[in-house]
Image (cartoon, rainbow, N blue to C red):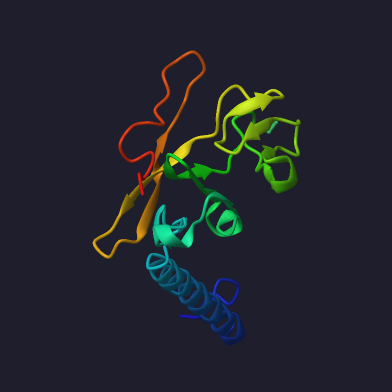
Amino acid sequence: MQPDTQLAASPQIVTRRRRFVGAAIFATLGASALMFLRFFFPRALFEPNTRFRIGYPADFPIGVDTKFQSQYRIWVVRNTEGLFVISAICTHLGCTPDWKAAENKFKCPCHGSGYDSDGVNFEGPAPRPMDRAHVELDPEGQIVVDLARVYKWPKGEPSQFNQPGAILRV
Ligand code: FES
């Protein structure tokens, strides 16, 4: 019996088909391996730590200290009542105000809100004082700041600035 020459594939076509199938299998296995490896690199957002040490109370004389503004977005303030940390976020729309030492105030560059050296608003559209971060002393006597815990003074409501943790009486 003669083979049907029209239905039988030539050796070159068979070879091409085998190569194609092999490449498809290789590509599928390669993609699976890449997906497997990707599993070990999750798309996590690594936020900066909200709890950190800033030094000893004696490191901060009376006044506003801006040295942690770019690193942690805070100012450390000492006045006659104690030491506290202001979160450097304007309560209008969240810009970072500038400390104007010559004018003894914080001034927001976005819409002009002004705050006194305690972070209390007195001009511009800011609706309330800037928040204060939780502060405490660690066993070594260093100041630990926790930006995840803030104290507010909402408009028309009592201030939280005298709560324990809002100020260090040091
Ligand atoms: S964001 Fe500060 S005044 Fe608007």
